Amino acid sequence: MKLNGLMLLLVAQPMIRKSLSTGVALFAAICILAPCGASAHKYKYHELYAFCSQANCPDGSLPYAGLTMDQAGNLYGTTTGGGANASGTVFELVHEGPKKWKQRTLYDFCSEANCTDGALPLSNLILDTSGNLYGTAASRGAHNSGVVFKLDPNASGKRWRYTDLYDFCTIPAGDGGCEDGWAPSGNLTYEGADTGAPYDGNAPLYGATRYGGDDGLGFGVVFKLNPGKKDSPESVVSALCRQTNCADGAQPWGGVIMSGGVLYGTTKGGGSNQPVPSGVVFRMTTKGKIAVLYTFCPNGGLCLDGATPMSPLLTDLAGNLVGTTYYGGANDAGTVFQISGGSETVLHDFCSEENCADSKNPTAGLIMDPSGHMYGTGSGYNGASGTVFQLDGSTERDIYEFCCGHVVTAGVNRDTSGNLFGVSYNGGNNNSGSVFELEY
Image (cartoon, rainbow, N blue to C red):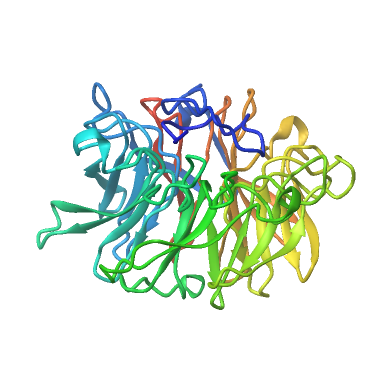
C-alpha cells in the first residue's frame, strides 16, 4: 500500500500501518492566529502572509514544513494543500522592503498527468548556490510512492522548471513493497550542511523514507541521491528494522542530518525496549553501517526519558545531539533531549507549566544561534496553545504563545538580526495557515 494522503500524525502508532488516511486533514483548524496570541519579552508578532487568500486556495493552504531563507532574506516553503490542483505548492515570499512581502507560487503539484510530479510535500527545501530548490513530496509520483524534485528558475526568476530527480518504489520488493523506500520524510541533507555551507548542487543528497526497504517489513530506509550525475540513480544506504524486534529502529520520520561525514537520525518506533517500541537515536556511515546511540523508554513503559521522536536532530556547539520527542517525559507530553556519548539527558519536559502553557507534543526540531541558545516549537492540541520557545541549557521560556488549539508543526528559522520566521499549519486570517515573523 502506497501513501495516498497525510496520516494523522497525532494518533499514529510506532509500527507501520497499511491503511493511510486520504487528504490533508492533519489537525482541526480552530482559531485565527493573530488576535489570540500573546508575545513575550522583546519579540513582536507579524503575520507576513495568510494562505487561502482566494476561493479554492490557489495560493496554497496548510503549510506543514519549515522555511528556507536566501541571502536576500526571501523565504521559500511548501504547502500540503491548495494550489491549482489542490495537491500542494512551492511558494516564495519576496522581501520587498521593511514589513513588505509579496507571495509567489513557484510550482503547483499534480501539474502532470496522473500526478507523476508528486503531491503532499512534508519537508523543508534546500537552496543551492545557483538558486535552485530541492525537496521531496511524500505522495503520488510515477509509482504513487513519493518523489525527490528540483526547481530551477529561468533568467528572470519568474518561471520555475520542475525536474523529477527520483520516483520511489522504482525497485519493487518481493512482497509487493518498495525496496528503495516510499513516502520520503524529514529534510534532505548534504555534507557540510551542519557548518552552514551552502549546497553546491552536485554533492550527494541524503534523506529517509518512512516506509519501504528490502526486509519485506517496510519500516523505512536512508537513501542517497546524486543530482549532479544523470547516470547515478538513488541508492539505499541502509534499510531500518534489520535487527531482531527492530532494535535498530523503525520509521525515521525526522529524516537524517550529516555531521563530520556521518549520518545521524531518529526513528519514531522500534528499539529493543519491549513491549514499548518508542524509537532510537542512530548513527549511520555513508556505507550503511548503523549503530544505535540510544534507545528510548528503558524503564518499563514510563518513558520518563521521552518517546517517539518525530523530528530531525541538531548538533550543538559541543558536538552533542539534541532533539525532541512527541511523547514521554515527566508529563507524557514530549521532551527536549540531549545525547552525549551514550547517555541521554532530558533538557525540558513539556506541559511543565500550568495548563501546558509551554505546549506539548513537539513534531519539529530545534535551531541554535551562535551563542548556543536553542529555539523550537510545540504543537499543542485539545484546547492548549502551541508555542515558540527558547531553551538555554535546561531553562525554557516562551517567546510566543499561540491560542485556542492552534497547531504549529514546523520549526523556526532565524536571520542574522535575531528575528524568527515560521509557518502555522492552521490559523491565520483565512484559517488555512500563515507565514509569521517574530521580530526581535
